[in-house]
Length: 246
Image 1 (cartoon, helix red, strand yellow):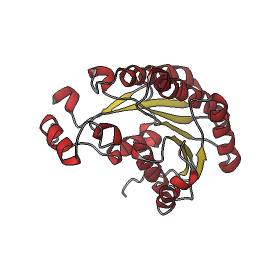
Image 2: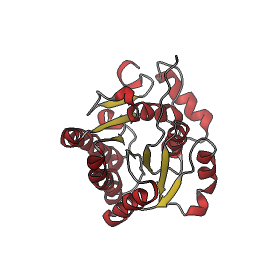
Image 3: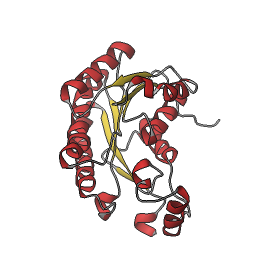
Image 4: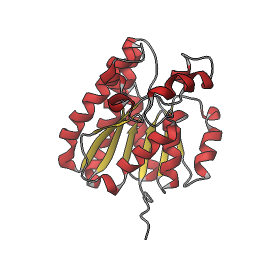
């Protein structure tokens, strides 16, 4: 009999999930049966189409417009999630941006920390949970040409290891995914067209293609599942082999 990842009854908060990797993750987790909380700073009218897409694949999602760089807003995010769904089983710290030093630090480091700390009491009471962070291969390569992004994504990398060590005794497993060369708004700021971007990167990729949001969402789904129950504190590189063998 084929194995199927079943997240029915699980509740997942995904930050920055109105587009990109976050949205792809919300869709895939909903398809696996999870109750998904879509979190973003976009106004509700700007995400109605995305919510409909998620609902077509699984349970009706909940949209909470909260700024994760504000601790009080994060606490409200978790409280309203528990009030609506009764629990929090999965947190995907996906929210990211290209901004100045302060805003980058506020979202990539402080926001990630606020969200993780806020869900721990709920997960601890339930006997466990999963936290998955998004960092970047630029932490190791120095790429992107955006120092604010590189440095603060390194904070996400380090906090993954800190959380893994600190939360594991409570049954909370923390891991991260480290993508590279993913079709996104950020990477497209450097190219005139998608064709130009693909032409630039394809020769550098051992698998001879760039990555897409769905590629990263599948790794996140694995980390949310029972298949990863012995993985904690790991940073999974998902880059088509570019960094190590490209």
